Amino acid sequence: MVSKRKVSSFVYMKTIVNEEFHGKQECTSKTRNISDALYVLNGKWKLPLIYTLRESPRRFNEILKLIEGITPKVLAKELRDLESNEFIVRTVYPTTPVTVIYETTAYSDTLRNVLYELDHWGEQHREKIKQSIRNNKVVADKHL
Amino acid sequence: MVSKRKVSSFVYMKTIVNEEFHGKQECTSKTRNISDALYVLNGKWKLPLIYTLRESPRRFNEILKLIEGITPKVLAKELRDLESNEFIVRTVYPTTPVTVIYETTAYSDTLRNVLYELDHWGEQHREKIKQSIRNNKVVADKHL
DNA sequence: TATATTAGTATCCTAAAGGAAAGTGGTTTC
DNA sequence: GAAACCACTTTCCTTTAGGATACTAATATA
Image: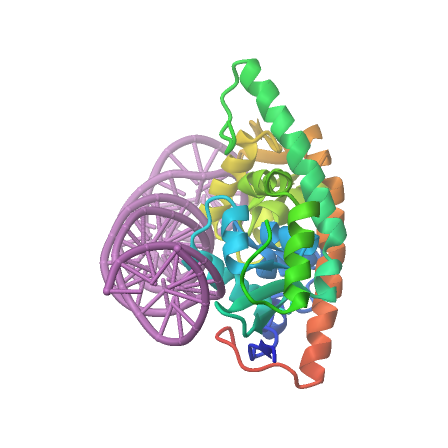
């Protein structure tokens, strides 16, 4: 009845593959965790996508309207990436027209605190930028 | 809105639930914070850099050795970016040869929780990946 | 027959990120 | 006079991210 796309499991992590890279060096071990996290989460869309899909499972065109500015090509690619890293699951229901539901896995729940802190920080950051603009300081920002 | 399409009751339910409990306006405003945060923090180096500079003020060549893989050109650019966003301060001491110290501002301290959660998540993520490799779940990838 | 809907692809393109390798200028030490 | 140190800069190059626009197949509705 429903079909799920076959995915080739995880992407190797650069830091694991390149053992000579991080390895036993004490100095880099402190930033290694953050670099590893960024390696799978980096980019403009992945975290916002996980955030909205964690709120609720959604369909392709629904996400397109929800995530402001994303194009179908980019969305399809990001969803494939997230699926291959087991953050989301794609399920096809054979309705007419077809229905495809994307929903987060339990693994996405481990990002809960990361998302919460980024959400919180982003909000106060925008407030700071607004304040800077009022004080005639010029700082680049995305939303006004 | 209720769809006239013939869908399984499962999907039909979800669509209604989505519309009633997760309005579109609300959702986009929530991902906006995260997008705003990513706008200034995105990239391979910024968060690892803030992390190490929050540990201790450091000199240019010191950072170069500490952050594995970064080149002087990229480091100089990233430091300029972080400075312009008021995450760090650059101070020149007229020694011979010249000494340049980079240190974080109080504003970088607002990223404390974000960094802590990313650090924590990255560590457990790497453990998960290692486990997957031991279980032979991983298929070859371009980074090999 | 014409149109709409679904979940995407296909093509083409630009800008930005990132990287390798060498060089710079001022000063001090050997 | 040569070499080394520091904090970068310069040049050239490749890769990746992201975006605009158009298009597809299958079905259903008007």
